[in-house]
Image 1: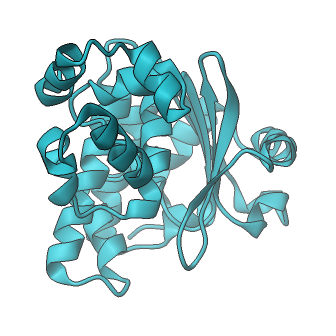
Image 2: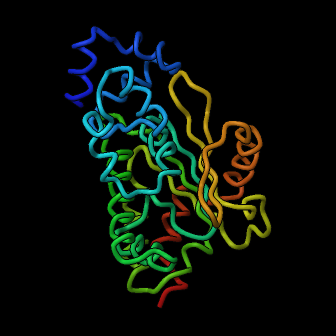
Amino acid sequence: MNEAVRRAMAELGETAESLAEKLGVDSKTVGRWVSPGRIPQPRHRTAAAEALGRDVEELWPEALRRRDLPWFRPWAEIERDATALRSFQNSVIPGLLQTEAYARAVLGSGPLGGDEVDSHVATRLKRQVNVFDRPRPPLTVFVVDEMALRRGHPEIMHPQLDHLVEMAQRPFVMVHVLPLHAGLHPGQAGAFVLASLDGRPDEAYLDDQAEGRVSSKHVAGLWRTWDTLRSLALPRDQSIALLRAREWLT
């Protein structure tokens, strides 16, 4: 429990419903702000702090310490609340399935400095805990292009593929490889994730060279792309067998 937020609301007699009405948001959204680690978007933080007569840093001090990418935070919240996640990746292993060494290699291949890489790796590993280690984890389905499995140094890729095999055998995790012999496919336009949420419309996450973004208007089209990719991918058991064989690694 975020005690600072809870106390501020209690002192003013505010409930999640009454505060939500003042701020123009859903009451469930306000309810999440009272949970530990749930930090509202900047505009909501400011508005909530003003409504409660507190400073932002008093209510959410960790907001000033967080070093993850600001544009990614809305998706991290969605990811944490999702009842199902369907992820397609065409060039790298999905972030939720990355080992620490692989994540460090991927993030370190870009423009980030050493301290930034450490921070982002820690954030990525925490996301995995938030999704997979819940009392009731979401259904997570991953379609990964075989090319992503072939990119990386063997010393990093062997443990990474071992991890994929281990994760693929969890009850609520399904990993499907899109084989090279599937040829051209609509997923070549880029990676994406679809999130199903309880009582809320589906959301999508799309990534590009600059930054990722949350989108609700592209969901229908991405579902059609997802259905095509899933139909082209190998079944679960064949995907696990391919990951174990990994004949392309020496």
